[in-house]
Image (cartoon, rainbow, N blue to C red; front, side):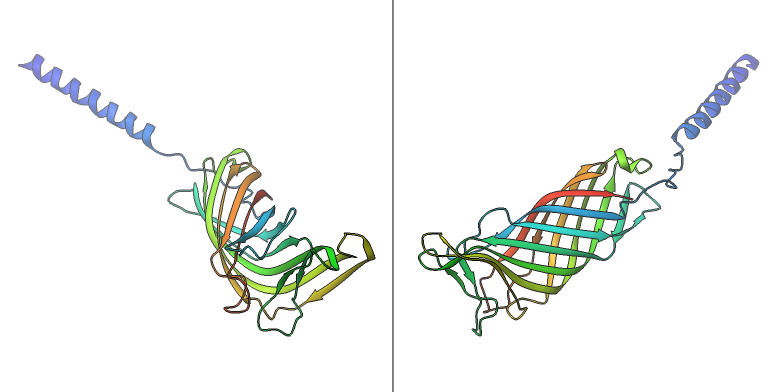
Length: 241
């Protein structure tokens, strides 16, 4: 009996010690985020275009977007791989047209896009819009202690306030594309445009570089003031600091 009791006692002691070792192994070590850059600065350059544009509105060339944001990142205490980020920024879209008149200053009820290939026209017309924006992102970082070398992903939205809308027309030509007057004409008006916009965003990448995509949920122009188009953009994000 004494031998059996001694054997049981030894078994219980060994089991207890093993349980303690297992507990120590499973205990998570706190993640050091003191050197984390948090991707405060985001710089984006991409291709942009209009979803839902009618056949009468034809863009040309490489239309682009350029965005800069200063964001503040707040990791979740329960899981530092996840965080929320928000902050101010400036965005701009530049849509290119060829042999097309964009009547941004016309005293009409709707914004006109007129094909002028068979008459005098500008060689290239750019319609540019700029916004003051407030983006919000839900972020995932695979290695939060080393974000500059880690896989990252983010989804979010941004709210924008229209600051400026203008056209830039370059080189007046005749119907045969001969130069009539090599000059630049700029016109500005926000009358046809919605003053606010809501945009869905997403990013995925590694370290300082990621691919981004955005889609405007609201229409670019006011109801009845122009085609019901929604700008979208895809491009490259440089993040850090």
